[in-house]
Every structure is written in structure tokens, then in C-alpha cells.
Picture (tube, rainbow, N blue to C red):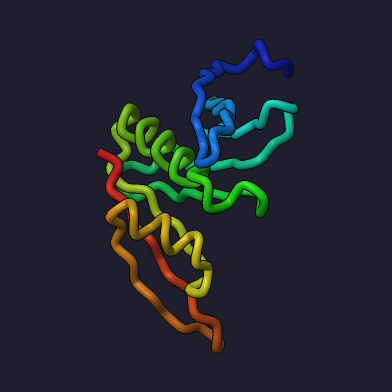
Length: 133
């Protein structure tokens, strides 16, 4: 498979500090994936959700490299995911995070997410639910 075999959309996001990253969105194999690339072509973030959820919240994930955290990249990735989910009539995205993950907690709070915290085997996690459409 080559890059031309996949429908790809490229947008840009400007981070805190002025750095511009390319957000590359593609939809294949039942997943919508958004990758973030810096000016040197280095992957600095990735987000995805699983399509075909038949009305249930779509499972999502967002990850940003440590040196790009707290600069707006997670927010840019989530906004792109929400737009893609809405375009596909997916109403909700959900993910699980460690309860002490401050960056993920700030992202969830800024997105007006519904959060439910639980402790399992002594480890606290939060289930996040964000409205897409």
C-alpha cells in the first residue's frame, strides 16, 4: 500500500510559541487517524477513533510527545477528531486515562467532557466521554 492508496487530508495547526504542525487525517481499516508532524517531518502526536460504532460512543485515543505537550497540540488533535466524528455522524468519543494524567485531564476539562473516575486494583482511572455531534 502506498500513500496514494489512502484518502488523506492535510491541515495545519499553530501551537503556543508559533510552531506550525501539519495535521494529516486519513480514514482506513475502520479507524480515522490524525497524525501531527513538525517542520522536520517528525511525528509529534497521533489521535484516532474507531468507526462503525452503530450509535455507541466511538473509542478514541490521543497521544502527544512530551516536548509538544502544553502547547495546544492535544487540543488541535481532539478538535480535528471531533470534526471528523461529526462528519461521520458519530455522536460521542470516549477514552480511558490515568486519573493522575494532568495533561489529559486538562484536555478533557477544556472539551466539556463527562468524566467518571474509578479505582481498580488500587489504580485510579478516568473514563472520558466527549460529545462530537
